[in-house]
Length: 201
Ligand SMILES: N[C@@H](CCC(=O)N[C@@H](CS)C(=O)NCC(=O)O)C(=O)O
Image (cartoon, rainbow, N blue to C red; front, side, top):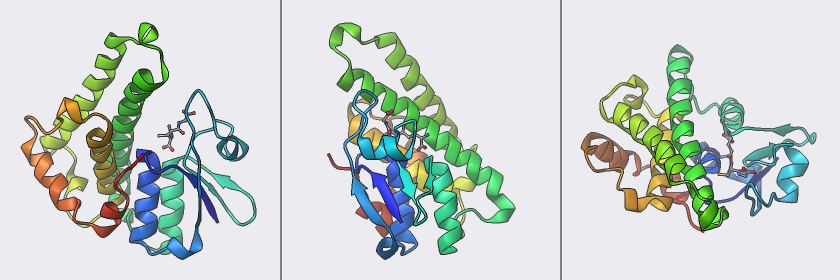
């Protein structure tokens, strides 16, 4: 199996964290690509018409995307039980919240990195950041019970989302006013698979 990936992507990090955590490293070849909405990598486009990563290419050539499909697939394959049946929908909802943080944060990154300054929209970026803050506040307030208890994929996704905020939007200081979530993040960041996947350019 192959994973088309790029280390800075928070969506990719969910998958690579699961791979390391579940001990699947030897079974998956990593294909590192540089891809953006404006310049799509050939390997990503060939496997996913949307041109987005991560994409997992199975041994029979079938491609799986997006990240939530790949993590479910790998969790089944490894038997890592990161989506336990009794709380699966809570965990999927928590993962969707984390993915939403990533989507908004990545869209701000694209706006500043890919668009010339005169085409950038500050109000669009602030609207996206407001989504991030609403989600961070809900996590801070304990609105998602799957944040506690045994490690699950929703928790890993939240750690990857917060890690991306540190990586690309450090100046916005998401920890301010969110000390519960900051402590939670510090604790989950002891997981070796998360340490191994800290984003780099
Ligand atoms: N919903 C997708 C989002 C994936 C995504 O947006 N990936 C970004 C990298 S962080 C990407 O491939 N961007 C290139 C593009 O938008 O064409 C998932 O969960 O996998």
